[in-house]
Length: 79
Length: 212
Ligand SMILES: [Zn+2]
Image (cartoon, rainbow over the protein chains, first blue to last red):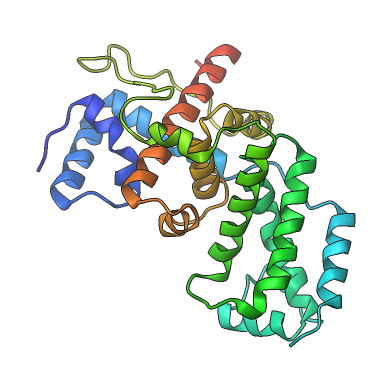
């Protein structure tokens, strides 16, 4: 198992979440998070940030643009 | 007419065949599924909502014109997102709002760009302050409203990567293919962007007051 300092650990969170660490690193991250209050809170906030980003305000193509594209598609002659 | 509402899209083979055959329901389904994400992607490069809409419109026109020649070397989704990225990038350059992509090479490297070091040397002196719990709906919608403005503060390459990954939910493989960057580079850009966004959210929560 690898041992990490706190600043090394926070640099690895994205790689950890992407499952891009080797097993000894992954275990080291888990062990560190289990006993370090600062990093575990940081880790939770990091995940909360990702969740917040995945819930953006709704967004829509304006209806006139959509209509124009539908007619452009209709007018295309299938080959 | 078929509807794909809630059911997700069929496989690429089915999509491509339907588009080539002029299946309007399929085209409408793609428009309604991907245009949202395409608008957000376009907005990473151009200066106004109107420009973003034009870029998305031109992208779909290119898709209509290009579907017969589509060779299936990438997925339909990455093909379309690559077109939107390239068109938006060109337009952004023309608008002089953004510098050419290559001018930002360094924000994926070790030196440049705003770099946030969350942990003080030697470890946490104080652990990060607790955030309010998300049970406050008002808070969640307030944060939601800030996301666009927060993303706009990021350097362009970080912004497009975090938009594709975390806002649009693309996989890292898809992002690498859309942007033609390496997995390692993608991860560095994504991580820096997340660190910055977490930092801004932390500042915001601090400014609105701490829970007990
Ligand atoms: Zn720690």
